[in-house]
Image (cartoon, rainbow, N blue to C red):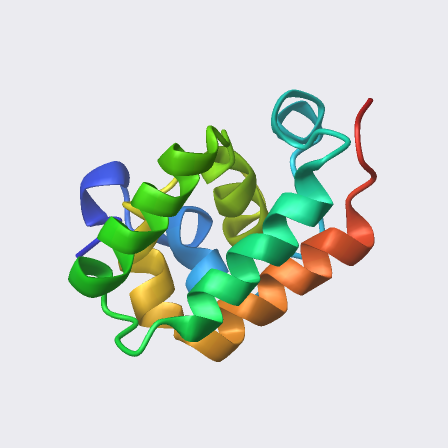
Length: 121
């Protein structure tokens, strides 16, 4: 349901939803240049700490405290978060994605991105 409105043909569904089934191994270069800065890996480690501390990982429960934490720190990392989890800066609502993937997979994908995406100065 999260991606069917984004697909015109059945064949489009895989392109729109493959990240639900397969963790990204490559990341969109244009999104890396624009969204993954020198301090992003450290910010993503902080995000992991906050995600791991959530007692309820549902979209409705996870979004408010994470957004509040991001805003209170003046961070701009929702697109980097999406890039780490999806592989590019597009897709359905981020917290709906993470709810479906689960906490363990979400954190694993962020860690993988930290290890594989070079920081941009």
